[in-house]
Amino acid sequence: MDIQKVLSEAAGKLGPSGQEMEIAEYFAEQFRPLVDEVTVDSMHNVIAHRKGTGPRVMLCAHMDEICMMVVDIEDDGCLRLDSVGGVDPRILPACRVWVHGREKLFGTIGALPPHLLTAEDRKKNYDSKDLFVDLGLPVEKVRELVRVGDPVTFRVPFTQLMNDQIASKTMDDRACVGILLLAAERLRRLPCDADVYFVGTTQEEVGSQGAMTAAFAIDPDLAIALDVDHATIPGSRPDTTVDGDSLCATIGPFIQPKLLQRLIDCAKEHHVKLQTAVSSRRTYTDADEVGLNRAGVPTVLLSLPLKYMHTSVETIDLLALREGGRLIAHFLSELDAGWEDDLWI
Image (cartoon, rainbow, N blue to C red):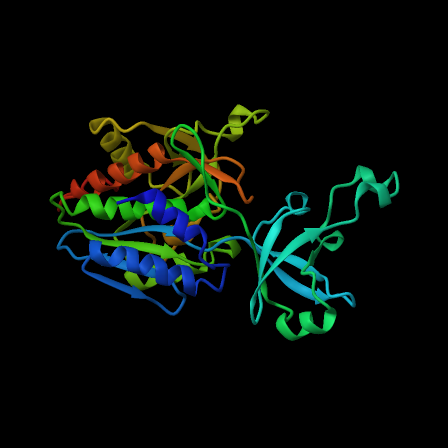
């Protein structure tokens, strides 16, 4: 599988939280040759089922993207914005965007330049109320094509960097859906008794509603959630980031410890580098909602290191991504009928 091509195409698909239809259709098509059955549920979760007679396993990574939303149209035709998910207003001035109205419109995000600000205002960071989208159209045309509530997404090129790294929007978390695709592809060449559900979830950026409902429907015996974590960059504190060259397994109260140890042992057995990090409370990922579903699901969390989270230039290492797919495939292949013998006290 040309995973770079898949991620490049996926990055260009529309999929804000609550409006994931386009990206769901894309990933459903990518999974179809690799599994027995693919469905898209009422929440737009993509559920790719590889049938088996062993334990029922749910693997999930979210497809939705952060974005902005039109909240007002000014008298000159400029659009005022609010965020859907965690968009930091400080990154927005001078961004190029798509406004998804009755037509797909190109715009730029503007703000008052420093020359027109008071000395006091120049000391402050931008706030959403200070920013606007300029479409270059008269207000009458804007009101005809754009409605309050229309999504606004980043318009940026998918960029290949040196040393097998890529930079793009939506790598949080479509890169991890790519890991699931690689695992599903590799698993076709391995023995596997597990009954496996690869799930592209929705609405994670606003509360993991997709993971919650998918887990209720699947009722898994165990689960692995995949998301991103902060990779080390200049100036970052070592206790807040992880190395960018390999996946990271979370340790914490929302993580089933013996299942985590099984995953760590699998990584050692197959020479896959795996880091660990601590989350002393919630993980704020799909893992939390999946683990608390129904009567509880033993769950672990794997994270792909990513630089510049929630920006238009999220950067990942493709080698780490590929190794993640290899690890998950071997983990699934080695689940047997006695997988939970030592899971409980």
